[in-house]
Length: 482
Image: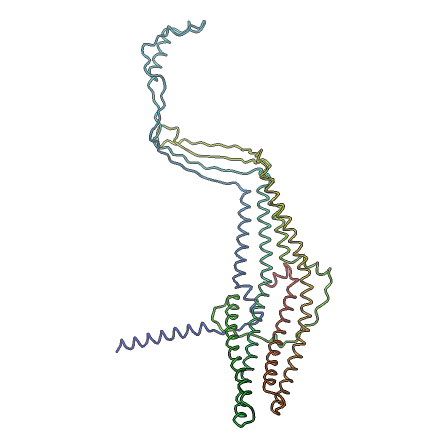
């Protein structure tokens, strides 16, 4: 009995666990355009990857700065000698040496008496077979300090190249923050547009189903022919298939939006579409070319390109620094038993000095490397000039696009109202048998298309205004949007 109750409790707990998991996977997420932009700027994978790139470049600057500082290194070594050499003093036995063969030097040889010669002979016999033993195991250890004094600008230009690269990465990250918001906005409104399209299709399918039921009754009473009813049935089936396809598309768009803004997959999105019914913004202000030039220079992408140009100039100077000499100061302090007769007897040693090195002939390698960087610099300068012109032209294009979207939205709204009136007239004429069923179906299909077109026109206007708004954002404005 107890075992049965335990099994029942376990099954209940498992069921509750999976039920809770399902509820978590299907959490409803309230999303608005502003919320999507906020999430994308903080949780998007692209933003996080860009942040890592900024940190990597920051570490590159710190690494380049360490080249100005002295380096401290230590070294130890151990060596065992198998065939050990021996140092011998003297030439072997010296007994019976004949001093008479020594050439006589006037004033010197005669002054050496017989006792002195005997003392010299005794000393030579004592050291004749003397051998100096060396340790079988030799150990050395030392601390070394090096300080660059003059490197021909290599260290300075290497540091400047890293610094400008870091600044370029920061500006690129700032522009990414701005652009990522627009991408999130596009994904959100693309999802909303698909939903609005699905709603229009569902509404039309329901309308056709109601018409089909009415026509069935009319056919049973002999008021219409079977062909009218069959044509309506075909429209119902087609819209059911379209509805299925659009539903799959919406699920795909939802997954992409959730992934982009860093929300859990499988969540149900409840979109805020109040902006679709909001009043249109005022007319786009007139833009003077001079005012455009003022903010073009402050765009993060152009600032990043300028920093890259500075980095290339520093890299070129670094290459040319190979033609200058290098002066380095060094010092060393250590101990070893290499010159001891006892293995544990360590002798201390220290040294200090300076080293000057100069590459006299490199067969033009450094010059060619500098010319390669110069070509890259010229190409980057052309790209920067072209980017500046493209951004300038894009701004005027975006202004025209906003005006165009407003006109398209007005026309789409008028077409929608006309299609609604046309459907009412077509329904009255069909009931009066003045038009065919095909004309009635076409009127309804036209209304569906106009509903979708008007929703899309509103979305295009919202996106055009948003893109035009962020176009002039520079480094200061971008920081405010983070």
